[in-house]
Amino acid sequence: MPAHENQHYVQKKLINNFARQCKNGKYKVCLLDLNKFTAEYRNTDSIFYAKNIYDVNNDDIKALEKKLNEKIEVPGFNLIERLVSNSSTDIQINRKELLLIKKYFLIQQYRNLKNMSLYSHPPKDKALLSDCSIKNDESVLDFWKREITTILDADTDADWKALLGNKDMVGIKINAQIIHSSFLMFFSTDYEFVLNDSGPLTERVPMYSLKLDKNDFMKTAKEISKLYFGVDNISDKVFENAYRMREDEGGMLFDTIMFTPMSSNLLIAFVSPLWKYSQELYSPILSKYLSFPQNTYVNERQIYASLDKMTQEEALIKFASPNDRYNYKVQKLNESETIYLNTLIMNEAYQYICFKTPSQTVKDLIREYNKLDGLKNVKHNYKGFIDLINVLPPFDV
Image (cartoon, rainbow, N blue to C red):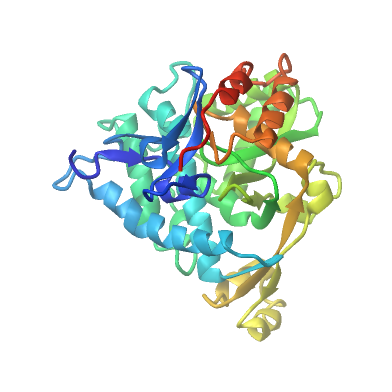
């Protein structure tokens, strides 16, 4: 088989954190296929991949796959592995590592199967942010690869200016701004997190029930896009889609956290900065566990001395050091809280769910998800999967 033909859209080493290692050195997970209605044990090298999805039209067609490995997968996973193996109730990282985590997360937003399907089969009745940046002679799928390449090529070791100031790639600019402005939290569990094929997830809750007519909504959304993201070339169709979605959902929805599990026992969350300023927000998780990192800045004196000339955010950027340190409290979730986040992961799966053990915990999770059947925004039916899991043979190591 040619090298780099099977290309993972979820890093294989990351999937291994949800697997058990066999005597032959291979890693296996229990995989649920929602389309084929199957449950089976599978090696991690044969799931969450597609053939040649990163191939590009230049002298080295595997250049993007190699670049992903060199610039994101190797350094990113080395850091993830350290975080996952951490046995303390605290996690410490420096500024360079913080920016690497955010870049890894940003890439995962683009390279997952669900997102890729929107590019390979763009919906005919919806306008996308890619419409603002795609070239006339460029396919949507090639544009997707160009977005990933742009993120990889951006120098983000010291700051994110290359991404935040990118006026030619509207989607990257907006997604980078959201991630860059968020702060991290870490959650652990003694139970088990599952993994899907759709990349980072969100907890989305109603923010307010303010009723705006279409014209007022469009005007407000355009002002926010220009003031907050510095973007003023988004088509009206994008805002019209957002308005229709808002009406369908019954009001404005707010993404409290974006999150992704890093292993069966550790989850990383990106928390909206609004939680720093508002006491009126609600989240089943954050309302109980909200905590902020304890930061230590190398150039702390210069930062405080400059606050009469610039904002704190400007000072933190100007006097940033790669050795600035961030200390996070690892929040321990109970079983019901673990099940809650897992139901969000299950609901946003594109086709697959995988987990380490077909245990009672996972069966309880499926039962809880099935209780949601018939509710609005419940996307899948897991009925019958417990029966499939029950007849699986013992795990063969």
